[in-house]
Length: 558
Image (tube, rainbow, N blue to C red):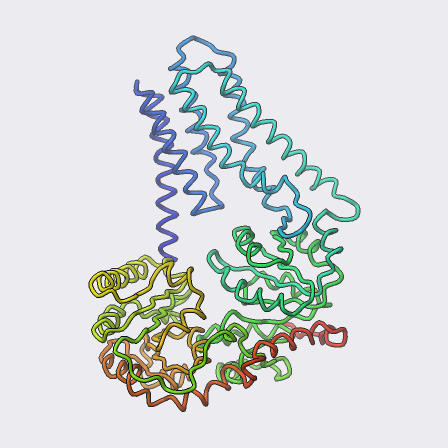
């Protein structure tokens, strides 16, 4: 979170500072060439700001830069009044004022992927801001080269014509919508989806939805994915053959939720879920995006759903332990289908001189009471693993770099692993090699043991039957296992690392808790045949789509 704030503030300062500097240099000094160069740098900073802060306005900065470029152009030309340059100035000013509202209007329109229709105006409107910056760069280059003013005027007129076409199409959509609904709504009605997967989350959260897409496809029924934030559209669309629809407004959502739908699935407790839950004719099913003893896994908001699919009976107990009262009939034990490809080790492995250990530190969380991150003390752990000859797979949480301190701590760990790999040749993995090139399942299958913070990784790992250690990063002490029962089947690593050697001996050599892990496996992951493990989820999901199951009972207000 703090890392995002630093990047946003840095981008804001660069964009504003360079814009003011460019105008002052051109307007008040004779350094026209230098001023034009600073103007181009300001445009680059503005483009970067829009990457790290998509809602950035930048109107004042863009006006300043455009004014500086035009003043520099007039000085370079030095031909007195030039009607072409004056016309260019008027056009640019109008475009600078117009592009922002057009981008905002386009962002409110429904968009889709994996459908045979693709309205052109909304995606074009989303790129108009970048196109305007490129236009200003071209005008700056023309000024630097003292080219005839009619050249930038011609390019500006072409850009203006494109903006006018976008504006007309968006206005037609807004004020004269088709009587039978828009093209995306009509295409969805032809598709006849039986269920919708609704997803809303902060940037970087697409893993929450992509982990479920293969299993939703295996249900064998047509469905649609509805997204609420534009940054997920390309990634999610590439991960499925199903239609993916971006619905930034309630009006767009109403168009996407066609009459053929019987159920809605959710993977988190995002606030925008309420926009779909108001459709009482649907059965609303919470899937979650992992199973862990973290506090969010017993969120009281779960009570608003008609069904709560959980991995095992332990998840139901977790709600009761947290004092969250939910009727038992809402829970459906379906296992954790994502673990079906994890290789199970039923017999203890012989001690290895060079074991492979998967280390999965989590992030610092939204709030202090959800901070289970062990990165501040992890250097001691990594050094001990290296001393024992272990190969380490370091797979950090996707949100780790949101905290600058966590990012620095993670960088220090990668330095240690890189140095040891260069020295010994041990196949340590980190960064993209561990988080993108390999799936979590592949990491689990490669490793002999796990060291993890409190997170859903432990539940997935439990399916393998292999030993694991859990970091106690808080002040719970002897109450840690009571708060996080899954730690009772692992080896608890104290925050001060005072027992690191004893834990690693139990983890990599003696493993006295093997029997306890097997007993806990069915409680956390359900008791289903390994060769048909995912079928428990698929069967439960299909039942919710049958007509007799698809009429939910009235929900009490929460």
